[in-house]
Length: 462
Image (cartoon, rainbow, N blue to C red; front, side, top):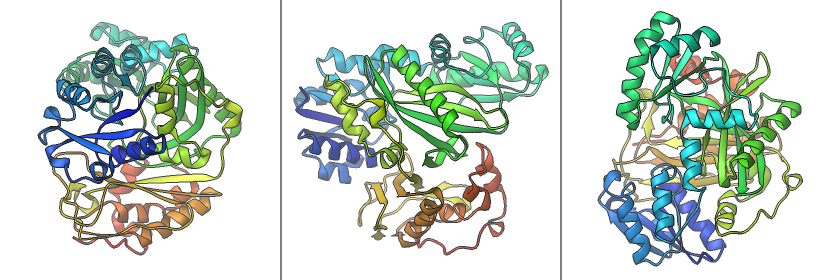
C-alpha cells in the first residue's frame, strides 16, 4: 500500500504528480533543491524536504540524498517524474533496496530498454519492425563498414546509451563513416560514459510518432499515438494526438506493435515507444523506448480521457490494469505547445527574470501545466521549460484555431518565452495541413520571420 509518496522532481511535472497523489488520497512530499524552495509544487504539496544545493548533481541526481530523504520522511514510494533519475536503473534499484516502491518499471527493464542497442534487439525478438541497421553495437570500423554495405548510405551513427537527440552523426558514404565513427564513439563516451555506438538507415524525411502504453507487468494497453515531428535540434517543441500522417489501418498495426513489445518485456508502468514513420512507403520502425512518463503525456490524456499519472501510481501499488483495450477510444484532437524561457529571435538564448504579470488563457478545451506564478523568480540552473499549453477540440482544424485563441490570451511579463513563435507556427500553411517531418522546423526557423504569417504577437514583455 502507498500512503506517502516522495516526488523527486521539480516544475510542472512535480506539481502534476502532487495533484494526482491528492486525488488518490496520498500524502505528497516534494523533494527539492535549495533553489526550488519557492516553487508552486513545494507550496502545493503536503510536505517538502530539501535534498541539496541548486546543482542537480548534488540534489535531484544525488541518489544517496534522495534515499535518505525518503527514509526520513517515511515515504512508501518514490515517483521520479521525467528527466533527472527517472530512467536510472541504479536509482530504481536503490529505491527497491531501501524497501520502497519505485513508480516505474523494474530496474532490469530500464536497463534493457534504456540501452538503444539492447532495446533494438528486444524489439526484433518481439516481432516489432526496426530501422535496418546493425543488430547490436558495432565493435569497430571493419564491422561498421560491413553493416553499411548491407544497409546502404546515408547512415546514422547513434550512441547506444544516448538520449534527447544527443550522440547522433550522419555518414553519407564510407569515407565519412571512417571519419565520423571514432568521433561518435568519443562523444558517446564523454556524454554518457559509454562509448558504444550502433548504425541504422537514415530516413531523410521521416516523421517522429510515438505510442503511449501502460502495463501492470503481465498485460499492457495502448492509448494511441502522438505526433512529435516538430523538433529543434531533435528536441520536441510541439506535439499533437492523434497523428495527421497515419490512417486507421497503420494506427492499428503501430499501436499493436507497441503493446506486443511492452508485454514481451513484462512492462509495468507508463511508457512510450518511439517510431520513425516513412510516409513514402507507409513503413514504421521502432527506435527507442522511454521508460517513464513523457513531457507530452497531456495530449494523450485529452483525447482518451484517462489520467496516466494516477494510473501509473496505481499499477506500481500492485493494482492490475482495470481497463481493457476496447475501453480506450480516441475523441477529438489535442495539441501541446511547450513554452520555454528562451528568446527565439536570439538563437533561443535562455531568458531569466521574475514573473511580473501572468494571465493564463482559459475557456473550453484549454489546459495549463505550469509551476509559474506572479512573483516567481526563474532559477538559472535547470531546463528552460516553464509551461505546457494544451488545447483540445473536436477536430484538428478547430484545435489549431483554439490554440491561436489561447496564445492570444496568454500574457507574461518578466522574461521572454517561445509563445510568440508558436503563434506564428500554427498559422503556417504546412503546419495547418499536417505536412511536415522531423527537419521541417529547422528549415522554418532558418527562414526570415517576415516570411511567416503576420499574426498578433503574444504579449511577452521583459
